[in-house]
Image (cartoon, rainbow, N blue to C red; front, side, top):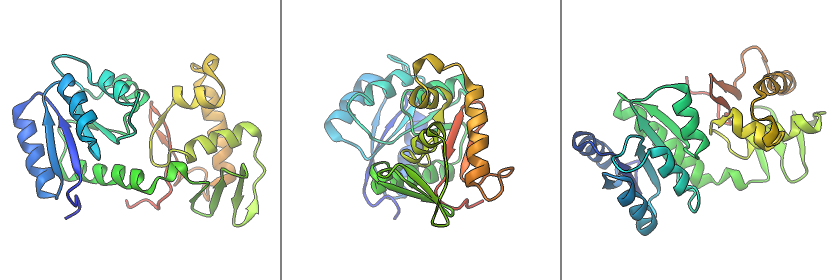
Length: 234
């Protein structure tokens, strides 16, 4: 089974949802622990060190975004937010707080399991700590601070390199506009989203086979960007 006994902490205050998730995750081979409020969720995460957290945003004692923010103060555990709230602002807030993914209710068990597998795979591969990240015919060498395409050096400006390197350190993860602007340009530029549009267009021209239909440097509409290092599965 895909779960291989790995532990998942499910945080939701609705008993029916907890039972359903416990059943579907258990059937997939995961060991499930549940919590119905933020306080018990944070305590369980600290004591049990789960492999992943599935977190609802509406909790009786604390907003799920704040739970995620507190987890990120001491843990890199993959966090998948599930919520009936599908506004872009809510998604941005959760991702900015450190969530790895965001699934909108209602969702299928298959979708959630696929996203969970992807999050766990990224964590286990520890790509964020790698010195070389490859996608398509491109290699980003973080140690040498250079980018190769088909084995040949690609000329990038310092800002272009910092942008693709930031994405390469977090492959598969959506990085919000604010996160990218803060990382590449600094806190004074967090409202300048047009910078990102311009520089992403430049990177796609230099690194994508078809810049008009990018396969790796992808836009998450209204939220941010992510780097896909695997070939899309459809």
